Image (cartoon, rainbow, N blue to C red; front, top):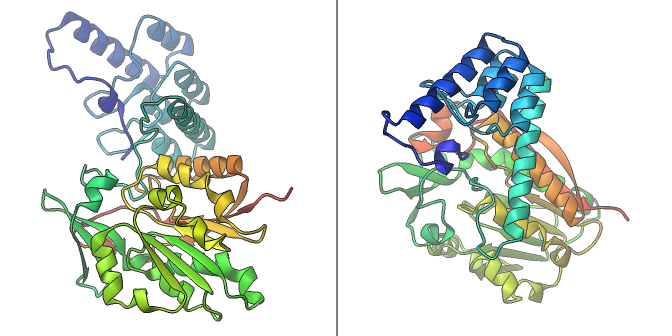
Length: 386
């Protein structure tokens, strides 16, 4: 889940503090002025008087939420320029962008979405200019809200188990301390993985070439099986996987004995640093689907593509689960990844995959959702033509 203002500001419980009372009254007045469609000059006067744009009422409504409700594009623009928080969520977990989207107000939605993109680009820039190495985004690739899975080191020390759910779906699960289950990978992703392999390999398949394939993150091995089942199996199939339980599962499944398959045990960052990956030469196809890494790590992976991909015909893709429990967050991070891939020298073609057919209870069971949208946006990146 995206950070809201509560993550950045200390919540103060002293309701008798005159300053807090004054801010609350100003914030409430600002929201009411917007909802009652008062002139924008009145709204500006309240902001100038110190009305806090981060304030949310008992229902979680902020000034930006209110502007989205009344569908005032000019007001949305003003609030964003004045510093309104683009990703604050109300009590129903809706952002102002979600409200604009529900009202089919494209202009307001685009203003909020673009504010999110600018914000994340700025955070990425600030991160690259500091030695403190802060996380430029709160999103992880499979978005869950628990420290055990929001840290790669904590995840690697956790215990995973492979099983099937009540509907016969293969799943790899992480059990959290609070008794909840998180799907590290689940069988419903099969259609996504199949279409990804088809789009990654279609040009090469026509030439009956044995590809050099790199996959980062094994999970259930769904995409690796699709690679192996190509009409011409890969000449080289390198799998990078750091988790001991996944590696044990791979051994049980015979992956260590498959012809042409090489398994690197460790994090991809360590493999690149030690030049273990470069020892295989360059690859025709690269896919990455990691767990518990934030967006900054995916962005970092983009920067290594030129040293890993073989030619202008080479292709790259990744599991696009960034912020995929919220339409606005998903849109922001889809577009952000496209911009960062462009900076790295790659164009992206997006394909929509309808994943809405399976009912939630069949897909998730008792596990936390990490993808709750009806459409998956499948990325295929290729080098820009010079």
